[in-house]
Structure formats: structure tokens, C-alpha cells
Length: 437
Image 1: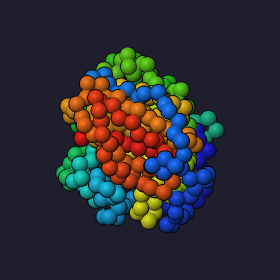
Image 2 (image 1 turned 120 degrees about the horizontal axis):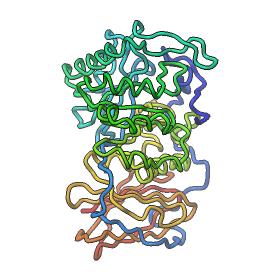
Image 3 (image 1 turned 45 degrees about the horizontal axis):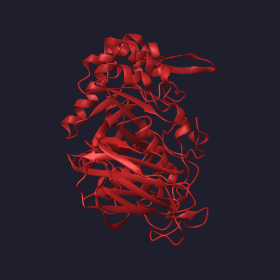
Image 4 (image 1 turned 135 degrees about the horizontal axis):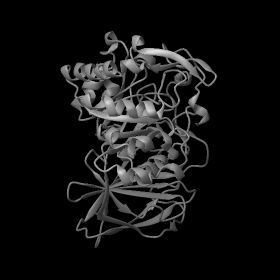
């Protein structure tokens, strides 16, 4: 668990203690913690790197999207303009294609996030939903370690709870939003402020009740991608048959724990989503540079090492999130947009040289039959001369976009491609996206 999970201000209505967030920082410039990056033209000599080879024929996971959470009850809704910034794909937009919303325990609150969900849907985004608590009458208290008022779903209410989730799905559908999936429980293994589930209880619900849910089922959403929470699902054929998406959060999860061999072994036909995180913390401004590049590296590892099909941030609009409180895209958001705007739902990750030089990270994606998207990150303090080779490609050029200390996803024009290869300078402490013509 990262230190930033416990945020210091508690002024937000009904928000649990570890979901309270920093006071609004207002309009902030990019906060540069170190010397400026080399410009796109390369004011200093660039270090040569090994060729990054992209093989569009070596296909990996299908991408469902990149997104974030809105939770009107806790931090207020996005404005109309902020919705368009979040889910639009043109210049100056984040390009998010997944929206996560809560499932309120009370039906009277079900319309809280509807406006944003409808607009996200209109802009082509997928909507998923996660509950923090069942309706109060379905819950009982028990002793969980030192917690004497812990909550859990009553065993005789499992069927009623499945119906509750169905009813929310139907409400959203009747109001113009078809949920792509609904979760059984948000973070059942870190639930001091909401409802606990043991792995055995989760498996029982999936075996006996989840089959009646009328949209895709997401489980278990462990707060730290703890495999002891999801392994029992994968190891139970009946429970697994009633799950469509293995969902996980990545709070404090080391990169070494990103791969999931058991999912590769037993998860055929299932999807693997990262459904909540903020990174690297919630205490710093999202405009702190070059720290914001950590977001780009985190997404890279989530795509390449974990092979997640979706990457979903916590609050979309927050001082530490992809959108600042004033509605402008932050530096963290710009790094996320290098994926979100260009790697669209249905793209397939393909093999690429992931680490062609120290502090350089590369991933690649295929859209349709021929469009290749390459996302490259240089966290080093020196510019890097990077050659890319696209196997069996007939493209003649790539368009590119750049984020560095002074620019956010700024168009850089077109670079010629010869015999499938092109060479560019990756400025120090920068992120670039390349899209074939």
C-alpha cells in the first residue's frame, strides 16, 4: 500500500478517510523539479540506443481502453466541458475511453453519475460500475481483526444482492447507458471503510449467484492485485464460468508482481482489467515534472508486463489526477493521453523491444490491419537517438506527438519511414507517440 492512499483532508461529503483528498490547488503551472529536458530538435548530442523492433504479426492482448472514475457524491460531478475534455479525442483532450462509476447502495442515488455516464457513452466510452456497499439491510457487522464494526454481506442476502446489481444495470440501460460490466465489490480485501469479502465468500457468490447478473461480471478488484484473492476464482471452474473480467487495483503493487501466470493458464476467454489506481502518489501536484513521467512508465508496465486490457485511474479530476481542478489537462494526464488518445478500444498490443536503452520504454499497438501506434518514454537525463523498425511495413511516414517540461501532447509533424525504419531523437525526460500514416 502506498503512503498516499491516506489523504489528509476530510471535507468531502461521505468520503471514507482514505478517499479524502488534498484541498484544491487551483490553476498550477508545470512544476519542474529538475533541469529542463532537451528540446525536440535536440540541443545536446543524443545517445544511440538499440533498435526498437516492432512486429505487428506478434499479437498480444486486445485493448479495451484507458479511463478514470467519477464519483459525484464524494467530489462533485464533472462539468459539461470537463466531460468533453476527458472523453474527447481531438487535440487538447485526454481521449479516455473507459468511465468507472459507483453503484450507490440506495436507489434514490442512482442518477448521481448518470449525466457523465451518458456523455461518455455518446463520445464512445465504455462504462463500468463498482459497489462499495450493499444496501444497509443486507449487511451485518462482525469482528475483523481489531475492527469490531466490520461489515459483510449477510449470507442469506446473496441472491438479493445479485438482484440489486441487476436493478442498477437495468436503471442505467433504461437511461441510455449500457454497462460493459459490473463489479461484485470494490477492494474486498482492504475494506475498513466499506464491505469485506473473503476469497471463499467471493467464490461462493460467483458460483451461486453471479450467473443471474445480466451484464459482464467483474471480480475481485483486490486493492493490491493480491493473487490470493483472485487465484481461488481461477481455480474454481464454476466460479470462473460466471466471471467475465478479472479486475485488479495496483496500489503499492511492485512491477515484479504484474505478471499473472495463473491467468495465462486458466483465464482463456476472460478479460484482465486494471480498474483503479493513482500513481505514484496523491500528495504531489499532477504537474510536478519529471515525476509525471512515472505515470507513463506505470502504464507501460501495466500493458507490457501485466498485459492488462484496460487501465483505469481513480478520480479523473483531482490535483493529482489527469485533469486538474480547473479542468485543464495535467502533466500526469498528458502522459496518460499518449496512450488513451491513440491506442483505442480494439487495438491489439504487438511485440516491440520494450527497453532498447536504459530508461527508455517502448510499447506498440495495431489498429485495424495496418495502423501501428508506438508509445516511447525516455526517463533519462540525456536525449536518445532511437531507431524504430516496423516489420513487414509499407508505411512511408509517422506522425508524432511530444510531452516534455514545456509541452503537452504537442504535434511534431511527420517523419519519413524508409524500408520500415525511422530514427528520431527522444528528448531527455520526455514521452512521444508515433502513428503510422
